[in-house]
Amino acid sequence: MSIDTERQQSGAEVTAPPVPSLVRAELPTWAPWAVLGGSFVVIGALLAATGGFSIGMLVVASAVVYAVATYVLSRVVEGGRKAADRLVTIVVTLAFLIALAPLVSVVVTVVGNGLARFDVEFFNSSMRGVIGAGGGGYHAIVGTLIITALAAVMSIPVGLLTAVYLVEYGKGRLARAITFFVDVMTGIPSIVAGLFAFALFALFFGPGVRLGFAGSVALSVLMIPVVVRATEEMLKIVPNELREAAFALGTPKWRTIMKVVIPTSIAGIASGVTLAIARVIGETAPLLIVAGLTTGLNFNPFEGRMATLPVFAYTSYAAPGVPREPYLDRAWTAALVLIIIVLVLNLVARLIARLFAPKTR
Image: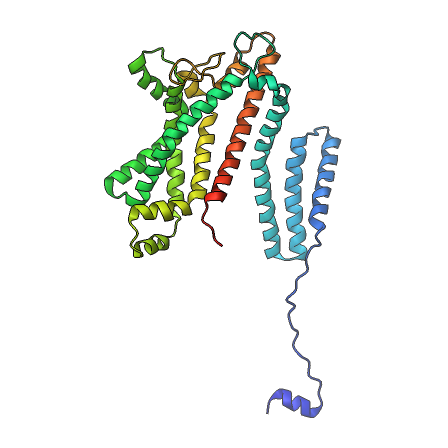
């Protein structure tokens, strides 16, 4: 007979063992916000009292106090595991905000200064015969679009086919050599690409050559490795089961690549191509060397100098005339137009990815 049975028979009261609670206390949803507000108030008061108030010091010190105070409060109320989770969340959020701050600052600065000349005259006038106020960047916009388009036409097919070879066909020393040189080309300075294009065209046209097409060649040197690397990574994540299923149906390898592999990864490929175009569209050094600068409009990339937005902005800001303000305003507007072009390219890439991505339903 068990002890509990004997106690029941003897009439003694049986006490059940305590059941541990599965529900822990939690901080109310308003507590983190209250701690954040209190941190700003306390740090602001201390900085004001010491006479060393500054926005940067206020933000940094408040963030540190907020992280420490939230961790201590959560550890007391919620336990160590939840406190560690809250601390890591705060650190990750702060890292994101720190990374976002320069981008926001650049956009706000460029938009604020670039709106001064963001008018109709800037988009339909060149700088031919203009001294001081007036004029615009129409010739630079046209030059940027032509040179970048030619660079994309040369770079995208070469980059796509190279990536397809490396992923689907490449084996042995040749594939390893191509991969090595692509990695090396990814990190070369842009000035080296400009000097390469200048030396190449100087062999045929003389040392004083300045051509828009030479600028396209220089940009393609920078663009090809980015397209290769981005496309290669997208092709690698296509499941091998899709390839094997196509092979099992008797589909040739080239047709499998065209109808299965590339359509499956078209969204990532479009994003990679857009990243490559955005990488080169703002380059200044190679275009300053091989394309030069002109104040007039030139639609022919195979004849004469051709202005571009990066070079136009650089020269307007680095060597302004008298008075300085009109030149600086045009430089900021050129930078704003460059940002808008990159934004439009990203929107087009997203549209292409959505239209050509494989349908799941």
